[in-house]
Length: 407
Image (cartoon, rainbow, N blue to C red; front, side):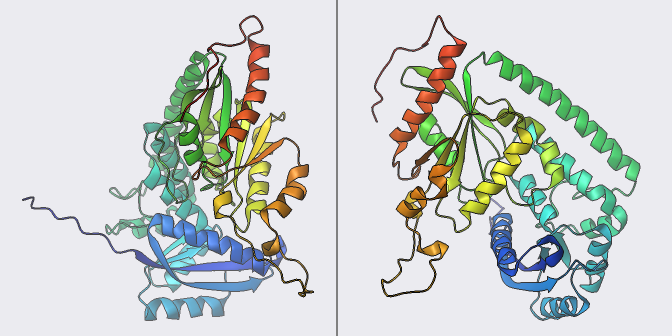
């Protein structure tokens, strides 16, 4: 029998802190939506959220982000309930981070950026993804070196302590800058290799799966490509771009699964994951997957569209794939209820007839998990890919004989 026994590590107890900032037009309801997502991020990282603190402010307090009274309230709760971790839903400045840690007597304090970086560090599998995450971590840590390394020095590990600094404490800024330089050079080499790989794929039509994190892109990828891409009901289950060659009827294409987007995605990560985003830039067709069962799916769709508009100069043929129709629910209003209709009262048919059906491009409503309406999606994708393929190969329209798929 082995001398080593596996014991499940207890989840770190965390509290979340959110601020509705009037200066940024963040309402209380919007802040609560962001905090729901932050709680999911914390769960993905391995923490258990035990309480949420909120505050309304015109603008962040320069020294501590939240007000003095609120910070005192947080401090008392942390001490009385043996809280391991305090997570803020906004990026903290180096000064704010140090002041809050000092006030909370050395308790671990993370902001949203640090939490996302930690999840990325946990999820990175390939050398490229690990280098991308490590670069983003160092860029985040560089302005926070003063006092940060003593924070990282504790060897108990846990959320926010993965990656650089966990095994070696570096206090010299020059060393960090040198590491950043080397990582950038390493990623440039990887990027050149990826460009070569993309060129070697020939002129096959390329389709990119994009969307908010945890909307079911990898599940749809598995369904369309009959492969086993890792899929899980957690944020950022996929970091590495996966490309599969598939055929719909008689037309071949390349299907790429990409990293999910999220609100307030750290700038460092956007820069670091350039090669991943290049798959989106160089795609011929976009499959924008949306979780229609999510209460804030309209906001998630807007976030992705805004990110895509920054990445892509010229519009590409796009199919908006509203996924998880099997999980969609709504509250039907009574006929004698005269109160205004709310978002929760709209049925799936109502939503189909509203603004979604009027937006540019094709739309389709599916369940990747339940394999509903997949043939309709394939037909729409086939029509677009066939036209691109025929234009690209005018004297050899089809590389495969036509055939009927059998399940």
